[in-house]
Image (tube, rainbow, N blue to C red; front, top):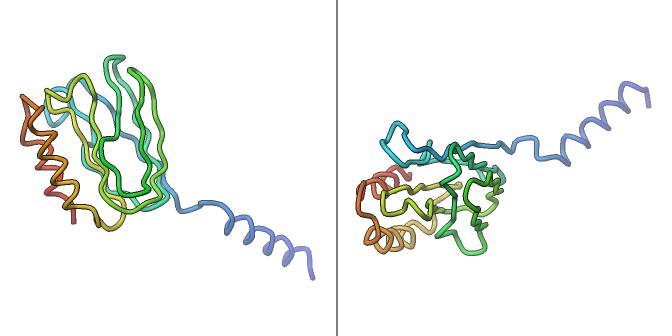
Length: 147
């Protein structure tokens, strides 16, 4: 086997064994964003299974906390001002919030692949909406973006 063929075979093995197609998406935790005050940006995100999402605090008064995940899906509960990265391997809808700013509608939705748990997400969102005083429409607007 020539050295060029051997190198090609080794490169193919390395590429096959790494998550070359996985992407990292960033979500900023903002006091003010395109959707108004106290928001994640983007607040709705569609990703592929195996992708990761990194939540970036722009202020120490925010966190990212998953409140609904598909069965066996990842969950997370970041501390205030903490950068959090989560890898989402399980398809479905993930709902998350900033704990201190939930009453201000600081919520987000991630769709990973097929939204098999969409009805569960909508039901959970109803309960969350009862605790939101301002920007009540945000969560349902984000859920309406799911395809």
